[in-house]
Length: 298
Image (tube, rainbow, N blue to C red; front, top):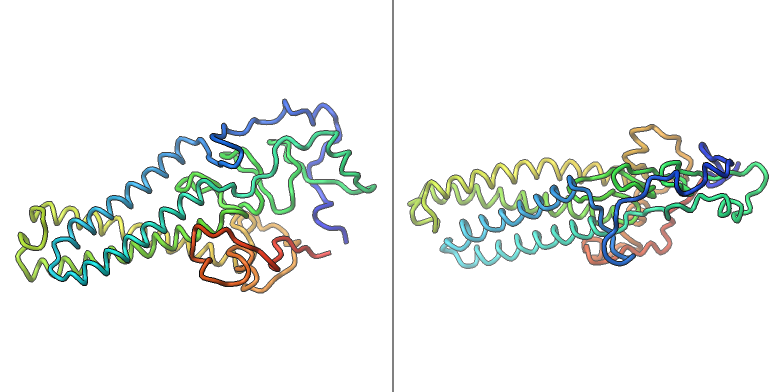
């Protein structure tokens, strides 16, 4: 059986079709070639909103709940824990947003390049007619990034980027840390409500009682909303990793042409090999080691 890399569905041999002017140009890139950033207005707004919501939670937790608390140990412990998790959440968000998700080199599906591949008789390659790129197996075209992305799961406006082969770890960490700080904020808000009800509202906060109540209610609404959203997203991402099937592949019910690996090996493919504390760090680039990213049935 031929390898999937030697199969195709949309290759064209006409020289005119392979000219670059028939391709949709990718969105502008900023900075050097190593900097990845998508200039999508919706994604940029969503990214800014994400950071502002985290900063709002920081403000309420620190200035409304922790600083007025009489128990210094309680304030110190929860302050360090919440701020540490919030920092990791924002770092994961930045990495997911500014890391190339696995974009295929654009515009390489020219007649000359295809001929240089020296394909055997009957062998063809995948080609994307939208970005004129030789498309690897399991790659899909993103209409927002205007690029083909390897193992693309979906395009997420909240990180203003696709979730793909090279940044899925950071996206999973982002959802996990946001879920954790949301749960932590809800726990502290509930505890603070109980404390203020038992004590004098004027003494349990540096703000007026009405302002304190409004700030806490808004924090609870934000925390509950994001806890549900990110917890569900975290679960679906982990399930997708363990089954080695992206969201798009599940949606399109694409035929499985790659070898089935164990769930643990699939986790190593995304987070790195071998297992270590670096799995939880957004600053550690996954080292695949023996974990083969592409293993096909031949």
